[in-house]
Image (cartoon, rainbow, N blue to C red; front, top):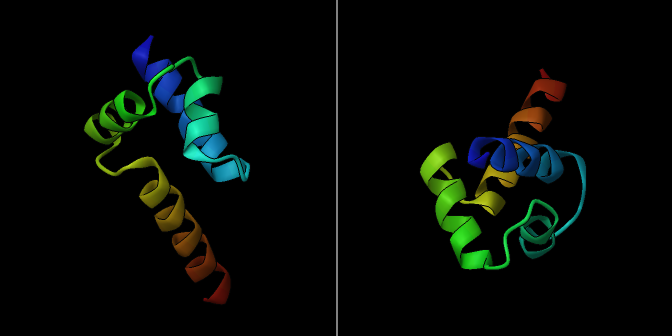
Length: 64
């Protein structure tokens, strides 16, 4: 269940402009801090850094 929530959060991070707080609530976390902790543990990056890195990688692919 946790992986499912975090997977949905990853999708929302890369496909919307929702804040990490909004995404945490959407995927069922009442505590943003707990969401950040779980996300970081499973993905290896905090949610906002995950979004930033994804967008940077996407930008790099477009310029090549």
